Image (cartoon, rainbow, N blue to C red):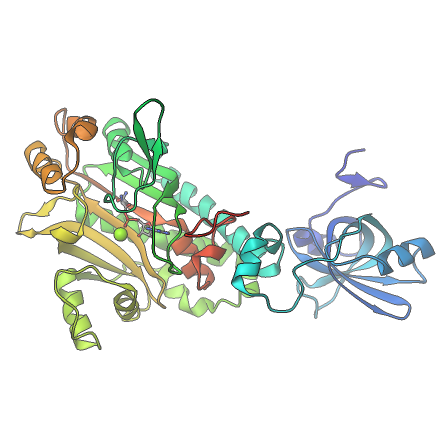
Length: 441
Ligand code: 4AD
Ligand code: MG
């Protein structure tokens, strides 16, 4: 006997019930909803893998079981034994005819009812909000995307290398750094990106990826910004900007194909229009230069956009909607990009950087670049960006000992999920979001 078994039966996940038609099974979970009609209870039971309707007739069960269920509240935990029956109208194609039901715990009145709640209330109850259908679907897609990410890089010979969270310096500009005391008089920063350590690791292993949480002190309250989010950052030796763009489009197409294959029912729970997603399963993705992108903006309602600026959300929306799949914008004015990007030999005012912008207003999914691999040039960039040289001495070493052309990118996991799931706000794409004014629960 284990907690997984009851009355000689081992629990069957709800999503597997269709494989057990006609059998007597045990389902363990929580009461999602209860409707009673005279001698019948209709229980919606969820176990994290799905939701099933369990029909309980007073004629088939012990009276005590029937009464106990009558008193059960939303989110009460329970065990149900029943026979699996096909039912075309049911979501998973099956329902249960109950022969036993045991309440494990009667829940107190549940704060999250079926009615609409405001975002502040839901975020304050995030630990409970996770149990709703939509949030469970997003969590499952997130897990699936993470699997697709690891599978893609493993299959292509990229090794996962972890980077530190405590760092001595900035990677992506000094305005979004979280600073903390690090013993005695020394300061440390929470990492904004694992890239610099990824570059060192790529010089050891050739092809690597860093995957973990990163931190940005974003002072603006937007639906696309979190202060803690997950980034996956491949980095490869002997890659130029074109190699980086090919890797980026194949990577995102792989993720989309994986989700379309594995998460159909989750996308249905989210009411995602998958026809909007399907084109992104194919490559290539369109490529436009920054210059052409600006021209396009000027012709499509943004005549006032100033050449040389970074794109804001409205600009990204217009650019993203010009195509049926994400677009790669490359060769950016060097001033708006990070210190580590290599200049375009054809025009040194431009950096060999690339952003991938999604359609439907989901904005930038990826930022990447070919890196500056020349010692002298990189030294100059540190001065121009007023970065403390001591903290970057080790990074300069990579240009002292067998420097090679190399490049990579960072994909924001939550941005990608928001786009795939068709979710407006990043706060629903990470289990416990961290934002300006939000650190509880
Ligand atoms: O464009 P970013 O800043 O690029 C880098 O950090 C590079 N060092 C990556 C690299 O080349 N290895 O960030 C990469 C991606 C963005 O495209 C976006 O998807 C996401 O990270 N991102 C955020 N996601 C949520 N909240 C924020 N505040 C984000 N800032 C960036
Ligand atoms: Mg960026």
